[in-house]
Image 1 (tube, rainbow over the protein chains, first blue to last red):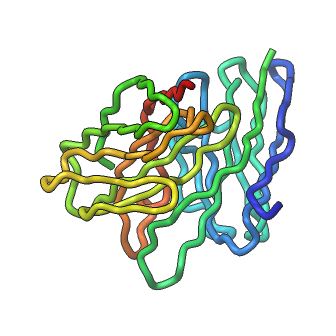
Image 2: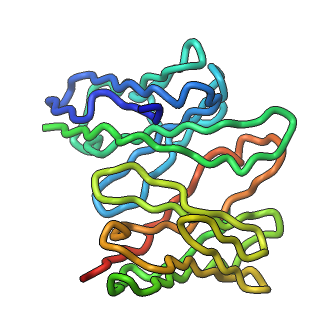
Length: 118
Length: 115
């Protein structure tokens, strides 16, 4: 399967613990996005990378959240001192941005990591 | 990005056409209309996009009104596997610019296809 993969698929943790999620994008894609989705709502943008550079961060991304994409391939999203309000599905997506040209930038989503904070 | 308005839910009989409307009355000239869908427990999936002309691909057709203030996604022969949440999104597309990256989802339309 050459799609976007995320690990783990499910995570249950206790309030106050740190968690880290991993996303592996489609191999040639240079853009990688993180979204969060709560029950009954559409996904909300958190942040995105072009190669290893983090180009935009939502104000939803509090100081407890950090995302990295160190080599421009896989990415990690860490949540420190988790709170019950962090319970959500965390979605990763990737796309190919062609240099020097406009791109309609179709995003391919992974299956998500469902986080439950007890 | 412009805001969109969609009905919260719709029903469709299997084999019939499903017509999903979307209002985007504040759309700007450089904003495209995108449609994604999300089947239960999966990530969203791209369906189609357009600027001002009608578009068709293997999944669906997109009809955009002449004033571009609304659009309709058409699934010509809906199947049970088309049951999903359908999101209409408008976003700027162009060369460069960080604002072109993210997708801004609303609550979408829950389409239920029944036998």
